[in-house]
Structures are given as C-alpha cells and as structure tokens.
Image (cartoon, rainbow, N blue to C red; front, side):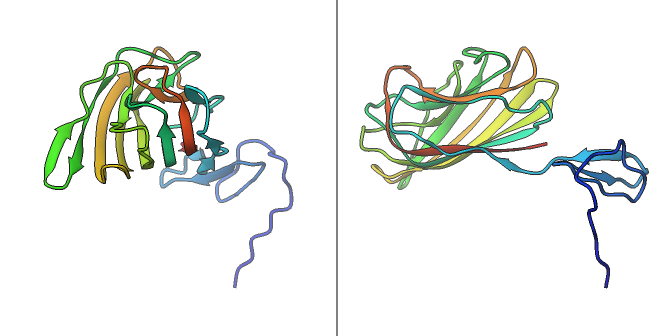
Length: 196
C-alpha cells in the first residue's frame, strides 16, 4: 500500500517530474513529460434570486475554460425572457448569436433569436419557476459557445438553448438578467461552477 504525504502547503517552483505539490493548486505531468497546472472545479456562492434586475458573478479567473450557471426555482415578476451575458471588464450587451426551443407536450416553439445575450428561458407567466443549467465553453481565444436546458414549472416545458459570442478580452464575469432589463427576480437561487 502506498501513502501520499503532503509535507508543505508552499509552492516551491515548477514541480519536478513525478512530484505533486499543493498550495491551492495541483500540478501533473502528461505523456510528453510536460508539467502543467491542473485546475479543479470551483463553486461560487449561491445567490438568492429574490430581488434586483440582474445577478452578477465577477472576478472569474483568466484560466477558466468552462462555466456552468445553475438555476433553482428562479422566477421573475414579469414575462421577459431570462438571459445570460458574459463580459471582459464589462458585460457584453451585443454580438451574441443565440436561439433555442421550448418543448411543451408534443409542440415546440422557438425562444427567439437574440443578439443581446444567451436566452436560456422563455417566461410564460410571472409564476414560472426555472430549474436547470446552462454551460458556457471557451472554444478558442475569447470565443464562447453555450448550451442550456431548463425546466419551467408553470407550463411544464423543457427549454433548450444554444449560442456563441466573441468577447473583446478575457472573460471575467457572468450576468443573469432579463431581456427587457426591468423585470425583477422574486424567487429561487442561482450559482456558478467554473473550471480550467
């Protein structure tokens, strides 16, 4: 039986082959003997979506390549679609290629093309509560693609969404808001997870 003992929590430089060192970060060696930092999945702090017109998650590290936005019982006081916007220094409000579908029983309708954000939920009534997640992945440079699936309780519908946006810099923030920007959140919670 082998035992791994971490004797220090202080990083002492680039780890040598076969070494594992930890100071909040892990390092590993690939098949080409190249050493690289291994980023773990990091969870944000859940935010109650019970007030305000937007919820922001900021200070996202530059090494992040995938972000998952999670919705639990999220509701607003109106019928404007819920959207997610990404940003680099400030939130991008244009340049998105976004659409999706709402499947209810045997029928399907479009969420509608959106250039101001990633539409993730179509709101049929203020009583709608949204459950599910949307994932955003860095495909290259500052280009991000998305895929989401949420369940709306009021009209028992599943919503699928897809899209892409090219940011003007390295992503550092995520905003959840509504298309009209004035409907306010009144129930549920939202959180994110991110990884490199």
